[in-house]
Length: 475
Image (cartoon, rainbow, N blue to C red; front, side, top):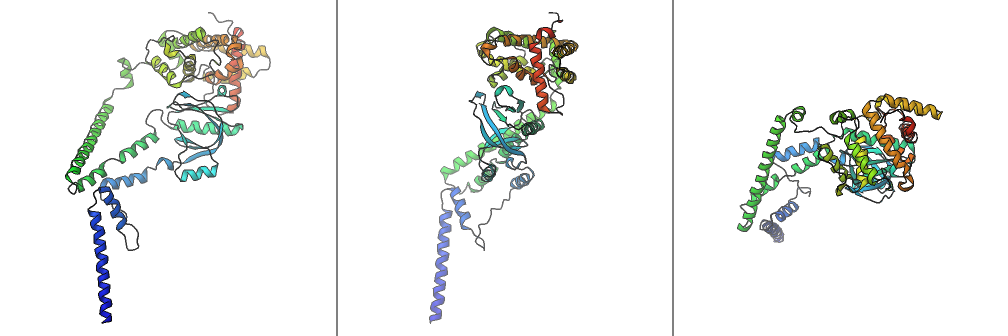
């Protein structure tokens, strides 16, 4: 009798357990929220070892997503090319100028971006693992250049992004800063200059991958189980998402047809649909098009500066708003009528910034590549008179557009120096600003720091001895 009582007790216990389980399952099944039901079901279904079973995807799209995920790594897994401590100052955010505050940062360079950490190396790496997002710089379309005029510190270079952010990086140790400059420049040069940057394509791929297909499949399978008031909203989401997908496919198809049928650049130029650019074109090309030996834009900028900028503190050293400079650049490239006296160009630093950008974007600098070593050898001469005669002889051998534009530009800069007591721009200051912009080697294989010294000295000599160097030139 005792045994049967025990067995009866066991049966009752088992039945009660099954009833409890059934009650739980009924509560889950009757849950109003579809998402709540999914989360509760996942937590209640256990394997033999007590581990939650992973949902099995039976969609081909999901399978292809997992394959692509293995092929294309996320941005966070990009290889780190270089890292270390540098002095950093952010001087512009979206084109808006910021107060320059130097701080020590742990800098991490990858193939597509730079990240700045405030902590030490160990803390930075740990934060990377925990998902901490540092200040990041997208290198796609960015511009890098030495910026002695931006700071009294030595070894300073500037990075400018397409979004208008500007950063200064600096180190007192020459070989360290040169190594960083070359590493970042190489990373920028490897990236495309337009919007087809790999990092942006990767982000676009992630956005496209997280489409509404999975949502639609869930809605379709459960739409019959929902109450009438929920069914209407689900049907709206279903048709709306399907409509978006078809619209996207239609746009992609049209773009593909347009690209495959697009005419060549030469054809568009012959028809006048695309005009030749001023910025980024060779100096002789611009001059031939304008039937002159000095570009019209250079003359306009110089006239505007001499009219209202000779007394401005830091003229040519202080940068203008990058967004406004780009707007001015666009107008010039479209050959629209330019009036620099217009109120939108009221800031004279915008005009000087556009002029420096014009010379910086020349495919071949104002001092041609073939003359670079000759000018360097001339500036190395010990006797000052011999040095002047050597530079003068080289200037006379230059092509007319280079020689005449050089004469107009340095003649203008001598007027800036004459007002140095007000604008605080000496011959040395202007040499630092214009030396690397007007004169550079075609292949930076030598010591870059030494080249910068010679570039500055040549620009200074052209200013200080302007009358002697251009004395034989006919006006």
